[in-house]
Length: 459
Ligand code: NAD
Ligand code: UGA
Image 1 (tube, rainbow, N blue to C red):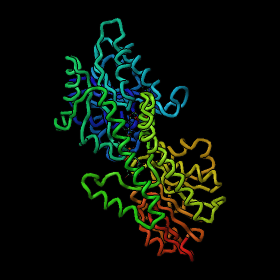
Image 2: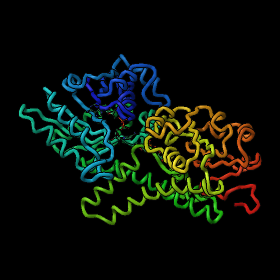
Image 3: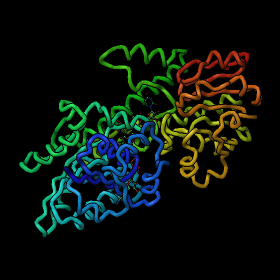
């Protein structure tokens, strides 16, 4: 039996520890956070994050071998293995501002661990970090004068929001990086044994520390790069009447390319893709690899362009002005099946439309509370309406910005009747039946597809 602790009860800490606790009744798992409201929510049936299947997993283990707490110091002392899953956002100040990772929460945690430990421990980097962070972590932890030894491991998390439980239950791989020393190898083995309770050994990959840390940044960079690549193609499709969905299918059938992550849309969002690529860019620049830095930075530039291009198309289509027009945005979350709005393209579109003085109505089944908080002062200018039918009443246009499955099944005939005409649909996720909408009377615009309009010159 091991005492496992996770510091940070967010989108990663909560679900990963719940799945570990569910599958490993032999271990005691405690999740701590400085945020009392979050811990209280984890202890209730109203979890702090929306994630399909998560409540069932939490309920299966909570009170048995899964505990949530704000008592950080006491739990540090009791733990044998400590996962650190605190946030590592992009730095907003000083050296590396706008690109480098802000490691202040990370370092605070390391010092807290050493200050509150009375026996040696394994410390696991679960957060996504710049390569070689483990070295700094080792130095802080092992600079104690009490004879304590800390083994630092890198165990990056690859789960995606919306599928977090499935991703944790059956991951493509679990990556564990450690030192090639006797105690390093033992630590790697101890962590691998925890995962091996439910994950086949051949999916548990062990590497050196630096490869493990860097693999996480590279995996996100590759995934985001595919989205930016198909989005770049979508722009060309709109100019040439090629269809980006047909192209994605045609190229994706080549097994060397593969069919995943080729959905063109209004751009990628989420708390990590942009942050992790910028982190990679910063690392390349730090080592003087300017061409490599520029290469990866272009993935983010393309994403920003795609979001702005979408708004620009909306304005052009709506006779070059949206000022004073009611526009219903369907979706605030950065993707379906989550309430997370961090870096959501929906909010980028919302902000740009507000700048154009449109009357924006934002609708979403789960993400409106987070959207309101993220928009800050601008929230006063937005109408938040969970019911998509009410949101579209009297609107000049609908823009679909999150790929919620329910949006494809809406009664668009009913919406069309209640809207201002000519009525427009902008499908930022390519989930709607364009022909059916066009037949209802809508002017239809989608990503990487020819526009379908009822105007004489087709424009
Ligand atoms: P999050 O903001 O949801 O959660 C982080 C939590 O850490 C917060 O609740 C915060 O209160 C807590 N915290 C910060 N400092 C603390 C301290 N000193 N003591 C105790 N708690 C503290 O962030 P997240 O989305 O869970 O991401 C965490 C890390 O995991 C990041 O490095 C991220 O890049 C990485 N990651 C995230 C995802 C994802 O899908 N969100 C997936 C893989 C990896
Ligand atoms: C992503 C990675 O998929 C995870 O492996 C990783 O652990 C995580 O980042 C992280 O480090 O935080 P996540 O951001 O939760 O997971 O969700 P994704 O499914 O990757 O989607 C990211 C964004 O790309 C979304 O806005 C989504 O709509 C967009 N996307 C994705 C597309 O526009 N097209 C696609 O084909 C796929």
